[in-house]
Length: 217
Image (cartoon, rainbow, N blue to C red; front, side, top):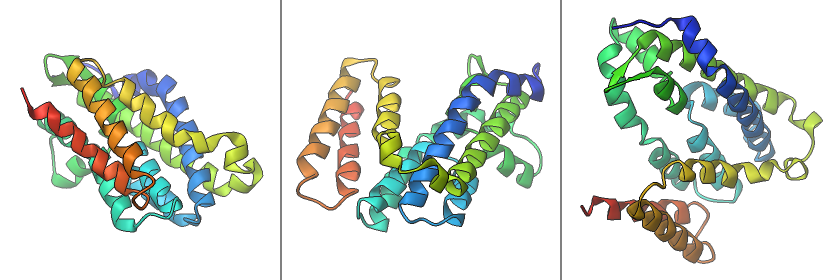
C-alpha cells in the first residue's frame, strides 16, 4: 500500500543527493582525465546509473587494464542490484516501459528510503528519491566533464582518492560479522598480491572470489 508521495521521496533523498552530485562531478572529471571524452561519461551515467561500477570501470581502463576486466569488475559491483530489484519488483506495476523506467531508479539510497519495514516498499517514495538521485548523478557527471578543465588536475584536487574512498565507504557498511571481516581481509590480500603480477583490473576481479567463503554456513 502506497502511503507516501513522490515529494516525500524527494525530500528524504535531498541530503543524500548533495553527496551524489559531488561524486558525479568527481566521476566526470576523472573520466575526462582518463580520455573517455565528453559524451561517453554522460551516456554511461544515463544508462548505468551505478557509481561504484562506473568508478571501477574508469579506474581499470585509466590504469591500462583491458576493457573486459573493466566490464567484469563493474558487473560484479552492480550484481547487488539483483536482490534489491527482486525485493521491490512487487510494487513496480503497470506496463513494461513504465516498470523499466522505474526499475532504473532503484539504487542503494532510494531502496533504503522507500523501505517501510517487513519487506514492504512505497513505490512513490522510491520513484521520487530515485529520480532526484538520477538527476544529481547525471547532472554532476555533466558538470565534471564540461567543467573539468576549469577545476584543474584531478590529482591536485585529491579526486584520485575518490576511488579508494568510495570502495572503503561501501566496505565499512558491510562488515558486521566475523565472516565479513575475514572476507574483506582475504579479498584485500588477494588484490595486493596480484597487483605487481597481473594487468590492472585482474586483482579486483580475482579478489571477488573471497566472497565465496560466505557460502560456508
